[in-house]
Amino acid sequence: MNLKEIKRLIAIVEESKLSHFSIETDGTKIEIKKETTTVVSQIAAPQLTTMLPAEAAPAAVQGSVPSEPVVDKNLKTITAQMVGTFYSSPNPEADAYVTVGSSIKSGQTICVIEAMKLFNEIEAEFDGTIEKICVNNAEPVEYGQDLFIVRVT
Image 1 (cartoon, one colour):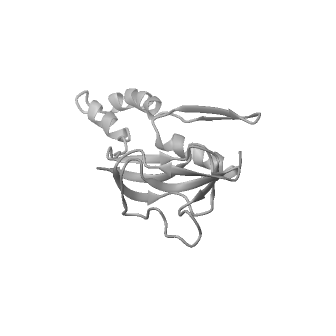
Image 2 (cartoon, rainbow, N blue to C red):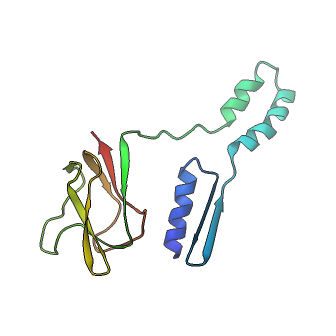
Image 3 (cartoon, rainbow, N blue to C red):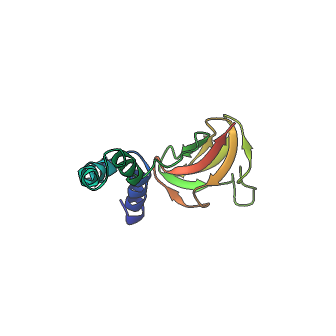
């Protein structure tokens, strides 16, 4: 794994509800752990209750815990189904299959991934609108890497 892939894994763990992630590939094992905020709340609670009246303590403790990030349930990710090279169009002279704002239908070809000299058409898994293209044309991609973020319709 290269540094870019490791940084991407760290970002995924930070943004998710996961507190621990482990992967082993090509003889390399990577383990990512993050601290949870509940430990801080449990430690802070006794100190707050001794400094504040009993009825004020729960509100102070609750206010000190960061809230969950808002997640848009209408956004889905289409990921790479294989390792290879991402291409946004069937050939260099052709227009891209999709662009940001394009409406897509399930089964529609949205890109190509070249793997071992074979060009594999990647199809949309659901209907929606392309919100973000996560990869540049002719860029290498890994299995499971985000390719598109789609607003599901």
